[in-house]
Amino acid sequence: MDTRALSVFLSVADTLNFSRSGELLHMSVSAVSRTIRRLEDELGQPLLERDNRSVRLTGAGREFREYARRSLADWSRLRRKLGSEEELAGEVSLYCSVTATYSVLAPILESFRSAHPSVEIMMHTGDQADGISHVLDGQDDVAVSGRPAQLPQRLEFLPLLDSPLYLWAPTADCAVRQWVDAGQAGSSGFDWGSVPFIVPERGITKEILDRWLRERDIRPRVYAQVAGHEAIVAMVSLGLGIGLAPELVVRASGMADSVSKIEVADGMPPLTIGLCSLKQRLLSPLVRSLWDVAGQTYGVQVR
Image (cartoon, rainbow, N blue to C red; front, side):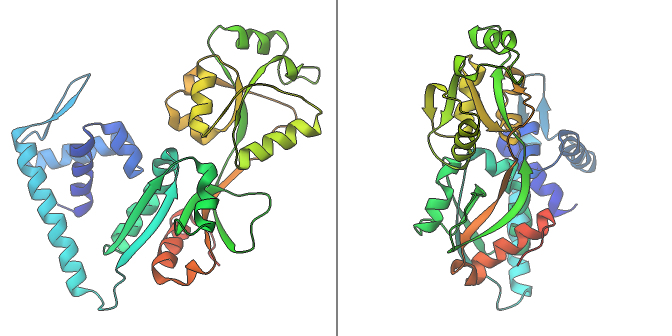
Protein backbone atom coordinates (compact mmCIF):
# COMPACT_ATOMS: atom_id res chain seq x y z
CA MET A 1 0.00 0.00 0.00
CA ASP A 2 1.58 3.32 -1.07
CA THR A 3 1.35 6.76 0.45
CA ARG A 4 -0.12 8.16 -2.76
CA ALA A 5 -3.16 5.87 -2.41
CA LEU A 6 -3.57 6.93 1.20
CA SER A 7 -3.51 10.59 0.19
CA VAL A 8 -6.16 10.00 -2.47
CA PHE A 9 -8.40 8.21 0.03
CA LEU A 10 -8.02 11.00 2.61
CA SER A 11 -8.96 13.60 0.01
CA VAL A 12 -12.14 11.70 -0.91
CA ALA A 13 -12.89 11.14 2.79
CA ASP A 14 -12.67 14.91 3.33
CA THR A 15 -14.56 16.09 0.23
CA LEU A 16 -16.97 13.15 -0.17
CA ASN A 17 -16.84 14.07 -3.85
CA PHE A 18 -14.78 12.18 -6.45
CA SER A 19 -14.84 15.05 -8.96
CA ARG A 20 -13.69 17.61 -6.41
CA SER A 21 -10.86 15.34 -5.21
CA GLY A 22 -9.83 14.78 -8.81
CA GLU A 23 -9.53 18.56 -9.30
CA LEU A 24 -7.57 19.04 -6.08
CA LEU A 25 -5.19 16.14 -6.83
CA HIS A 26 -4.93 16.90 -10.58
CA MET A 27 -6.24 13.41 -11.38
CA SER A 28 -9.11 12.17 -13.51
CA VAL A 29 -12.25 11.03 -11.73
CA SER A 30 -11.71 7.51 -13.06
CA ALA A 31 -8.14 7.44 -11.63
CA VAL A 32 -9.46 8.50 -8.22
CA SER A 33 -12.16 5.83 -8.40
CA ARG A 34 -9.66 3.11 -9.40
CA THR A 35 -7.40 4.02 -6.48
CA ILE A 36 -10.27 3.69 -4.01
CA ARG A 37 -11.36 0.37 -5.53
CA ARG A 38 -7.81 -1.02 -5.23
CA LEU A 39 -7.74 -0.09 -1.55
CA GLU A 40 -11.12 -1.72 -1.01
CA ASP A 41 -9.94 -4.87 -2.80
CA GLU A 42 -6.81 -5.03 -0.62
CA LEU A 43 -8.84 -4.61 2.56
CA GLY A 44 -11.75 -6.78 1.49
CA GLN A 45 -14.11 -4.11 2.81
CA PRO A 46 -16.04 -1.23 1.21
CA LEU A 47 -14.68 2.09 2.42
CA LEU A 48 -17.34 4.28 0.84
CA GLU A 49 -21.04 4.00 0.17
CA ARG A 50 -21.94 5.55 -3.16
CA ASP A 51 -25.22 6.41 -4.83
CA ASN A 52 -26.24 8.88 -7.52
CA ARG A 53 -26.44 11.79 -5.09
CA SER A 54 -23.93 11.28 -2.29
CA VAL A 55 -20.82 9.56 -1.00
CA ARG A 56 -20.50 8.43 2.63
CA LEU A 57 -17.82 6.71 4.66
CA THR A 58 -18.62 3.21 5.88
CA GLY A 59 -17.64 2.08 9.38
CA ALA A 60 -14.53 0.50 7.87
CA GLY A 61 -13.89 3.75 5.97
CA ARG A 62 -13.93 5.82 9.15
CA GLU A 63 -11.51 3.43 10.82
CA PHE A 64 -9.26 3.36 7.76
CA ARG A 65 -9.26 7.16 7.66
CA GLU A 66 -7.62 7.25 11.10
CA TYR A 67 -5.10 4.64 10.01
CA ALA A 68 -4.27 6.62 6.85
CA ARG A 69 -3.77 9.83 8.84
CA ARG A 70 -1.46 8.10 11.31
CA SER A 71 0.48 6.35 8.54
CA LEU A 72 1.11 9.54 6.55
CA ALA A 73 2.09 11.44 9.70
CA ASP A 74 4.53 8.64 10.64
CA TRP A 75 5.93 8.62 7.11
CA SER A 76 6.54 12.38 7.20
CA ARG A 77 8.28 12.11 10.58
CA LEU A 78 10.48 9.30 9.32
CA ARG A 79 11.45 11.24 6.23
CA ARG A 80 12.41 14.23 8.36
CA LYS A 81 14.37 12.04 10.75
CA LEU A 82 16.33 10.29 8.01
CA GLY A 83 16.70 13.37 5.85
CA SER A 84 19.24 16.12 5.89
CA GLU A 85 19.68 18.18 9.04
CA GLU A 86 19.44 21.19 6.75
CA GLU A 87 15.94 20.31 5.59
CA LEU A 88 13.89 23.40 4.83
CA ALA A 89 11.35 24.38 7.46
CA GLY A 90 9.25 27.49 7.82
CA GLU A 91 6.39 29.29 6.06
CA VAL A 92 5.68 30.74 2.62
CA SER A 93 2.77 33.13 2.10
CA LEU A 94 0.89 32.61 -1.16
CA TYR A 95 -1.92 34.68 -2.75
CA CYS A 96 -4.24 33.43 -5.49
CA SER A 97 -7.82 33.38 -6.72
CA VAL A 98 -10.14 30.53 -5.77
CA THR A 99 -10.02 29.18 -9.33
CA ALA A 100 -6.22 29.17 -9.32
CA THR A 101 -6.08 27.02 -6.18
CA TYR A 102 -7.19 23.94 -8.10
CA SER A 103 -6.64 24.96 -11.74
CA VAL A 104 -3.01 26.08 -11.36
CA LEU A 105 -1.70 25.36 -7.86
CA ALA A 106 -2.92 21.83 -7.14
CA PRO A 107 -0.10 19.95 -8.94
CA ILE A 108 2.53 22.40 -7.63
CA LEU A 109 1.48 22.00 -4.00
CA GLU A 110 1.31 18.23 -4.30
CA SER A 111 4.93 18.09 -5.50
CA PHE A 112 6.06 20.75 -3.04
CA ARG A 113 4.61 18.97 0.00
CA SER A 114 6.35 15.77 -1.05
CA ALA A 115 9.70 17.50 -1.53
CA HIS A 116 9.51 19.87 1.48
CA PRO A 117 7.11 18.45 4.09
CA SER A 118 8.32 20.84 6.81
CA VAL A 119 7.47 24.01 4.87
CA GLU A 120 3.99 25.39 5.53
CA ILE A 121 2.05 27.19 2.81
CA MET A 122 -0.10 30.03 4.14
CA MET A 123 -2.65 30.63 1.39
CA HIS A 124 -4.74 33.77 0.99
CA THR A 125 -7.45 33.98 -1.67
CA GLY A 126 -9.13 36.90 -3.40
CA ASP A 127 -9.41 38.69 -6.74
CA GLN A 128 -6.51 37.71 -8.99
CA ALA A 129 -6.18 41.37 -10.01
CA ASP A 130 -4.79 42.10 -6.53
CA GLY A 131 -2.00 39.50 -6.67
CA ILE A 132 0.81 41.77 -7.88
CA SER A 133 -0.05 44.53 -5.40
CA HIS A 134 -0.03 41.99 -2.55
CA VAL A 135 3.51 40.99 -3.53
CA LEU A 136 4.74 44.55 -4.06
CA ASP A 137 3.32 45.63 -0.69
CA GLY A 138 4.98 42.70 1.07
CA GLN A 139 1.69 41.13 2.14
CA ASP A 140 2.55 37.84 0.45
CA ASP A 141 5.75 36.17 -0.75
CA VAL A 142 4.32 34.78 -3.98
CA ALA A 143 1.13 35.31 -5.99
CA VAL A 144 -0.53 33.56 -8.91
CA SER A 145 -1.22 36.28 -11.47
CA GLY A 146 -1.57 37.10 -15.10
CA ARG A 147 1.50 38.73 -16.60
CA PRO A 148 1.10 42.50 -16.99
CA ALA A 149 2.20 44.29 -20.15
CA GLN A 150 4.80 46.15 -18.08
CA LEU A 151 6.35 44.13 -15.26
CA PRO A 152 7.61 46.27 -12.34
CA GLN A 153 11.41 46.12 -12.10
CA ARG A 154 11.31 44.74 -8.56
CA LEU A 155 9.30 41.71 -9.66
CA GLU A 156 10.24 38.37 -11.15
CA PHE A 157 7.59 36.49 -13.14
CA LEU A 158 7.56 32.74 -13.84
CA PRO A 159 5.17 31.90 -16.72
CA LEU A 160 3.40 28.57 -16.22
CA LEU A 161 0.59 28.39 -18.80
CA ASP A 162 -1.40 30.41 -21.31
CA SER A 163 -5.19 30.60 -21.21
CA PRO A 164 -7.09 32.01 -24.21
CA LEU A 165 -9.11 35.13 -23.49
CA TYR A 166 -12.57 35.40 -25.02
CA LEU A 167 -15.61 37.60 -24.90
CA TRP A 168 -18.48 35.45 -23.60
CA ALA A 169 -22.22 35.71 -24.15
CA PRO A 170 -25.09 33.91 -22.39
CA THR A 171 -26.47 30.79 -24.07
CA ALA A 172 -29.97 31.33 -22.65
CA ASP A 173 -32.63 32.93 -24.84
CA CYS A 174 -32.52 36.51 -23.54
CA ALA A 175 -32.16 40.06 -24.81
CA VAL A 176 -28.35 39.89 -24.76
CA ARG A 177 -28.32 36.62 -26.71
CA GLN A 178 -30.73 38.10 -29.26
CA TRP A 179 -28.54 41.19 -29.70
CA VAL A 180 -25.46 39.02 -30.22
CA ASP A 181 -27.18 36.73 -32.73
CA ALA A 182 -29.07 39.43 -34.64
CA GLY A 183 -25.98 41.60 -35.05
CA GLN A 184 -23.70 38.66 -35.85
CA ALA A 185 -21.23 39.47 -33.10
CA GLY A 186 -17.72 39.00 -34.33
CA SER A 187 -18.44 40.37 -37.80
CA SER A 188 -16.76 43.58 -38.86
CA GLY A 189 -20.00 45.54 -38.83
CA PHE A 190 -21.26 44.51 -35.40
CA ASP A 191 -22.43 47.39 -33.22
CA TRP A 192 -20.58 46.63 -29.97
CA GLY A 193 -22.06 49.74 -28.38
CA SER A 194 -25.52 48.16 -28.47
CA VAL A 195 -24.66 45.32 -26.07
CA PRO A 196 -24.21 45.73 -22.30
CA PHE A 197 -20.71 44.89 -21.07
CA ILE A 198 -19.74 43.43 -17.70
CA VAL A 199 -16.18 44.63 -17.17
CA PRO A 200 -13.48 44.01 -14.57
CA GLU A 201 -12.89 46.75 -12.01
CA ARG A 202 -9.13 46.54 -12.33
CA GLY A 203 -6.27 44.29 -13.29
CA ILE A 204 -4.60 42.90 -16.38
CA THR A 205 -7.73 41.79 -18.22
CA LYS A 206 -9.22 45.26 -17.73
CA GLU A 207 -6.12 46.72 -19.41
CA ILE A 208 -6.44 44.24 -22.29
CA LEU A 209 -10.15 44.95 -22.77
CA ASP A 210 -9.67 48.72 -22.54
CA ARG A 211 -6.94 48.58 -25.18
CA TRP A 212 -9.08 46.36 -27.47
CA LEU A 213 -12.01 48.76 -27.21
CA ARG A 214 -9.84 51.83 -27.68
CA GLU A 215 -8.15 50.46 -30.81
CA ARG A 216 -11.60 49.92 -32.37
CA ASP A 217 -13.07 53.23 -31.16
CA ILE A 218 -15.79 51.34 -29.27
CA ARG A 219 -17.62 53.07 -26.45
CA PRO A 220 -19.08 50.18 -24.47
CA ARG A 221 -22.40 50.35 -22.66
CA VAL A 222 -21.19 49.20 -19.24
CA TYR A 223 -23.80 47.29 -17.27
CA ALA A 224 -21.53 46.63 -14.26
CA GLN A 225 -17.94 46.70 -13.06
CA VAL A 226 -17.13 43.69 -10.90
CA ALA A 227 -14.17 42.15 -9.11
CA GLY A 228 -12.98 38.76 -10.30
CA HIS A 229 -13.40 36.69 -13.45
CA GLU A 230 -15.68 34.26 -11.62
CA ALA A 231 -18.20 37.05 -10.99
CA ILE A 232 -18.05 38.16 -14.63
CA VAL A 233 -18.82 34.62 -15.86
CA ALA A 234 -21.68 34.29 -13.37
CA MET A 235 -23.28 37.56 -14.48
CA VAL A 236 -22.91 36.69 -18.16
CA SER A 237 -24.54 33.31 -17.53
CA LEU A 238 -27.53 35.14 -16.02
CA GLY A 239 -28.03 37.08 -19.26
CA LEU A 240 -26.95 40.46 -17.91
CA GLY A 241 -24.36 41.23 -20.57
CA ILE A 242 -21.21 40.03 -22.30
CA GLY A 243 -17.84 39.89 -20.58
CA LEU A 244 -14.17 39.06 -20.98
CA ALA A 245 -12.72 36.08 -19.10
CA PRO A 246 -10.01 33.42 -19.52
CA GLU A 247 -11.18 30.07 -20.86
CA LEU A 248 -9.55 28.42 -17.82
CA VAL A 249 -11.95 30.25 -15.48
CA VAL A 250 -15.00 29.33 -17.56
CA ARG A 251 -14.03 25.64 -17.56
CA ALA A 252 -13.55 25.66 -13.79
CA SER A 253 -16.67 27.69 -13.03
CA GLY A 254 -19.25 24.97 -13.59
CA MET A 255 -21.06 27.40 -15.91
CA ALA A 256 -19.45 26.41 -19.22
CA ASP A 257 -22.83 25.31 -20.61
CA SER A 258 -24.39 28.67 -19.71
CA VAL A 259 -21.99 30.84 -21.71
CA SER A 260 -20.53 30.70 -25.21
CA LYS A 261 -17.50 32.40 -26.68
CA ILE A 262 -17.85 35.18 -29.25
CA GLU A 263 -15.42 34.52 -32.07
CA VAL A 264 -13.89 37.73 -33.37
CA ALA A 265 -11.52 37.97 -36.31
CA ASP A 266 -8.84 39.82 -34.38
CA GLY A 267 -9.38 38.39 -30.92
CA MET A 268 -7.72 38.98 -27.58
CA PRO A 269 -4.15 37.89 -26.82
CA PRO A 270 -3.92 34.91 -24.45
CA LEU A 271 -3.47 35.54 -20.75
CA THR A 272 -0.13 34.25 -19.49
CA ILE A 273 -0.60 32.92 -15.96
CA GLY A 274 2.28 32.31 -13.59
CA LEU A 275 3.93 33.12 -10.30
CA CYS A 276 5.23 36.54 -9.34
CA SER A 277 7.52 37.45 -6.47
CA LEU A 278 9.87 40.21 -5.45
CA LYS A 279 13.38 39.48 -6.72
CA GLN A 280 14.64 40.08 -3.19
CA ARG A 281 12.25 37.47 -1.75
CA LEU A 282 13.59 34.86 -4.17
CA LEU A 283 16.87 34.99 -2.24
CA SER A 284 15.02 33.17 0.55
CA PRO A 285 15.53 29.37 0.26
CA LEU A 286 11.90 28.85 1.28
CA VAL A 287 10.44 31.05 -1.45
CA ARG A 288 12.97 29.84 -4.00
CA SER A 289 12.07 26.21 -3.28
CA LEU A 290 8.41 26.83 -4.16
CA TRP A 291 9.46 28.75 -7.27
CA ASP A 292 11.71 25.92 -8.46
CA VAL A 293 9.10 23.22 -7.82
CA ALA A 294 6.53 25.24 -9.80
CA GLY A 295 8.92 25.42 -12.76
CA GLN A 296 9.64 21.70 -12.60
CA THR A 297 5.94 20.85 -12.32
CA TYR A 298 5.05 22.80 -15.47
CA GLY A 299 8.27 22.01 -17.31
CA VAL A 300 9.39 25.61 -17.72
CA GLN A 301 12.87 27.07 -17.48
CA VAL A 302 13.60 28.77 -14.15
CA ARG A 303 16.17 31.55 -14.11
